[in-house]
Amino acid sequence: MYNISEEKQQELNLQAAGIFSELKQSYGQDPASENVQRLIQDYIDIAEEIFEDIIPFIQELVDKEIEIEDEPGLFPSPFSKEEEEWVAKAIELCLVKKGVNFNGNETVAEASI
Image (tube, rainbow, N blue to C red):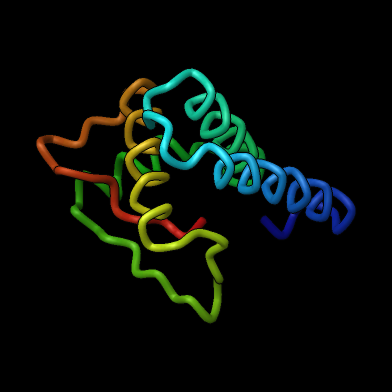
């Protein structure tokens, strides 16, 4: 993450903010809908630009049953609790399409968004 220029970090932050805004507007749609999945894919594209091999890393977290604890002070969420659960479901659906195997786990560990 620190190998990315400050200018690029700002650009990615603006892109993420735009995606979050669109997700908030889309709240209530089916998490599997084309619109929601496109937004989630756009967000994953940003994550992949920052962190190489993020999908194998996520699979490793799932395999080891590691849950990511939210730290509101470090990563304040723009979403309500209900919206976070909805986004987590949409992310899970997208990750399954990308080959992440949740081995019967109900939901993705809620990652900071």
